[in-house]
Image (cartoon, rainbow, N blue to C red; front, side, top):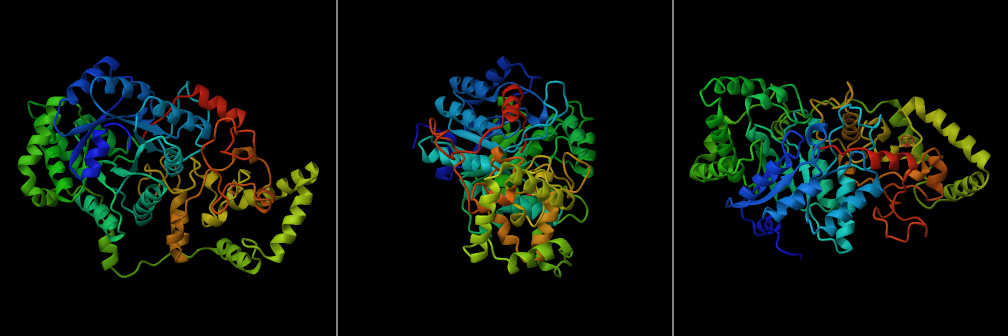
Length: 515
Ligand code: SF4
């Protein structure tokens, strides 16, 4: 498969390796980044440079250009690709560009919600989520583009719903075609251990890189406030870092030592490698690698010490040992809709389904009737679910929670930005907590592993009932390829279409980053 790719080769051979994050932010001159890239290329064990895409929701350099230039300097790029302000067609174009440049390593991310700025469209476009982006790349791989796909996971979540949904999402990403995973940053060895144990229990053998972020005081202060979303530093660690910052070297030696110990921990726990962030200076990376090798035998001792977590945070092993949690009730609406679904079987070939299909075909033949039906559907669903008339209803696959009520319009689970069950964008509970709790109460958590395709945006503003019975919509059981074959766009239903408004936003708007 493909040409030399040290990252893929190390992971396939089970050789512990290092990937160093290069933050392509506007604050770093591009020339400086490339100088760093050529120095990193000479550090033994470093198999790739991971080029961020507008990390933290702020504009930066084009990661594809930086990745190509880094490769010219000898460093294999791992380019971050986010779903922010990219519709399905724009995501495909970006992947085609990467393939044309023979860039194999792509890190598929949903991305941080854009920070407000004059350059941003009012409401960012999120047509895809990371799971769907992985699926799209896997489709392109089937057509000959040799992508080696990374996906993100955060074990550093401290409520049951946040944490277990991350693990379910990782399973979905692997099932969709991801080759390996990279953890979010965190400073809690029990969580690193928990993720490994989860994958082992589920029989998942894919490699995972453990994130080791070299944490300086300024970043620690920001992260202690939850910035960027998904990155969190506990008060105990913040205090320690503030103390370390009083030293003449401003805490430099202490943070490099912590990073080396963390590398030893993730290696000891069976991670496939370390994803080094927060410092990309070649001499520091070289020191961390050497020091971690010298400390390798003491990893369990260090794991005991790396325990920065919120009080009474959720751990899967503790929850398994404790009495079963009392579940919230599912609520009246899900119960009524479940009962209706059983009484009126329309999700398989029944006489009722055939009758309704005939009725809806007739309605569809008359634009005024179709419009009236769409308005009726909207009037019923808006107050109950916050419906936005997407035309591709997946309420039945999401425990009757509308995906359009998620600010990123995700359909396969939460992004990595949640904190203690709260949304990264709006001051409200994450909608996926509701999905999880209802599924848990009904004993249907396994169903949350079902892949949900992106909506066909061409159907926005049409009745999802008509679309369902006429088999037009995009949903589990009625999926359409994500990749459009050039020249086939008008030859029937290919990939999800693009509305003019969305395309304008994608063309003019910057991307964002994150996990
Ligand atoms: S999934 Fe679409 S059709 Fe269903 S409630 Fe949400 S916006 Fe409406």
